[in-house]
Length: 351
Image (tube, rainbow, N blue to C red):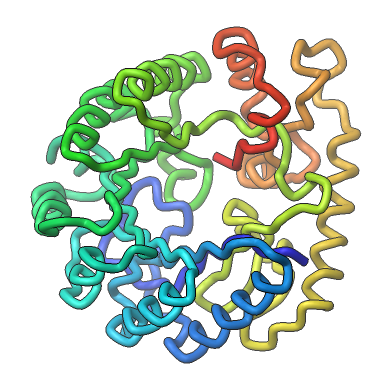
């Protein structure tokens, strides 16, 4: 089983309760986290597999809010240790908290990257998702680093309240020398109860994608665009898994497959053979899904669409054998953003 990346939720603690949080971590009443020692051992195992398989390894630390981990100072040492081996580490933070040791590393560690989450260009818009009083705090922390070893990634989750600010957001941060990233709000966690106000239409998504593409051309950037998933990356020939690890240590085949039934193992008793067997069972189910008809027979995308994202189908309908809610977006992508090449299609990841 080839593992190219691991998105590790090192703690379920969070100081915010964002309206779109995919795992609703701000509501947690008890703490669950992966210890620094366990984290170190697991990354070492992944590094050994990476060398064996001849593929680079990427690790992301998230949460909750990773800087709230009770041993985060030790974790900064772990980051230093493994980045010196060549492992690429990304820390995904809401940018409202500081850890001086970590912020110091951002100035010097060439294999350390940071993604700051901001959902607006001002307090009014950002507070809709992230609560009042956090925008200025985030901007102060982001701009406090004198010189980043790698430009930070500033990410917006695009939703009903902020999609008209995408161009202003893009220009503001790119002109500061930062990178920007975008995703569309997903039907998960806290967003489920706020879906009517957070979700936007397929046509609005296409307008946003067009805008970002034009901005990329203007600024010579290559933003990771949140295209609708055409096919599940897990069904590619000889797939490389981008696994999710939850704070309780459970392993899932991707970040969007958050449901308990999709668990394929646990880092506390890591057994690669057992994990592979469970993953194969899930892959078999996903393969069967591609043969189902969701009204696809006469669709213009029939020659290349593989029923989209199965995890999104579960999150939207509670049923794997259903559509993922993005059929119309894929049709508009085909018609208005040109037909994706085979290479581009393979590179698309889940929203």
